[in-house]
Amino acid sequence: MAEFRVERCSALPPEEAWRRLTRWELHAALVPLTRISVVTPGPNRVGTVFVAHTGVGPAGFDDPMEVVRWDPPLPGRPGFCDLEKRGRVVLGRAGIEVRPEGRGCRVVWREELRVARLPGAFDGLTAWSGRLLFGRAVAGLLRD
Image (cartoon, rainbow, N blue to C red; front, side):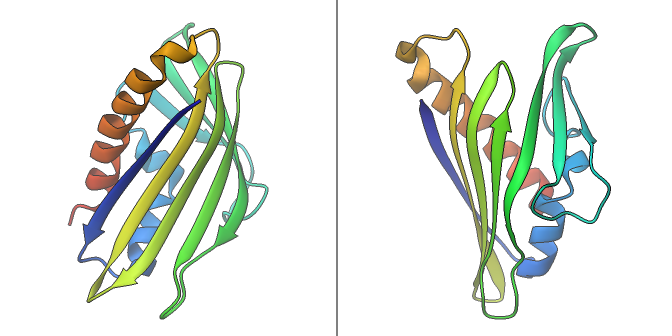
């Protein structure tokens, strides 16, 4: 299983960083060749399901995810969101933490994932790629 972590500091208040990070459709603009559709009606909560489709037309795959923890940040308290990846190609977990820090916040994005039919020998490359891709996406979502 490939594991990686991305950390970013932001001048945004924790509540605004949370709002941006959990508007799932916004991620598609920052992840190449990806469309995201939210399957369940809002608002976000435990049980929300969304699907990231990566690829071009039929030459792609769906990455369905479900929110299994939803604790938005409150004044002086961090927020946590955990996702279960339940696709046929990508399996695992993701976690988002938004913690107040100074006048802004610190965001920690964690992933544990397995790509079907990809040998464990590629876990290092998968983690490196994930850090790069998600690091850019998180930075883009937090940009003023």
